[in-house]
Image 1 (tube, one colour):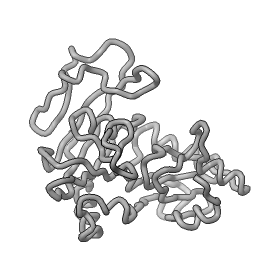
Image 2 (image 1 turned 120 degrees about the vertical axis):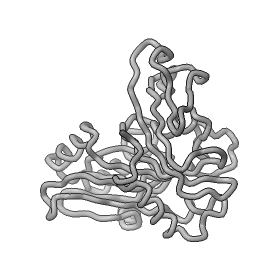
Image 3 (image 1 turned 45 degrees about the vertical axis):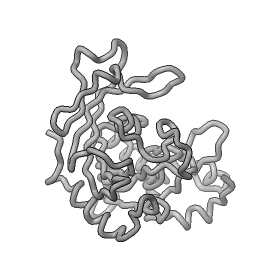
Length: 260
């Protein structure tokens, strides 16, 4: 992707202060560290701006990216991700069919061949118990695995596609993508799991982020990155995006969480 940093910065800016820069990243550009690829941190550095990524989202994912301008702020913010106190929410589009109004996916992850993330259990051992997807402990494969939990709520269903709001309680690599795919609802356009090849983007969006920020008054960052028109264009979802976002905000409020 041939992009000039000043243009990208201006186009994608959500907010900034003396310590942080928050961007609404388009799908198709990396945050940092991708081999043979130009990324946001590299583009900024080439233009004379040093940024430290607080977290990462996949290249194929659009939405919220938080970057620190100073190392003390970077440390303060990344510690909250490590301690799982950062509040995160995503939006995704999957094919319609059988998902409940709310659900919890509790499936451990492991790293398989070629560094691919997978569920740490045979696919056939995944079972649904009410609105929870899980595997019995005896079915978890030997070796290193990582307990992983994703909450979701159905925002709207067009009859062909469903918009989900999701909260990754744990923040594992590819967690949402793998969890949804292994219960039979791969994210539309996901190159890892949707092999139809008929979509020009992956319909996963990093939507909301909440962290403590000691240098601000009040000492809090509560950020939201609205999806672009390309996200809503699928399956007739474009009728009233703001109403859908309001429904998603209600679904993701702490009072309505489904996780114990």
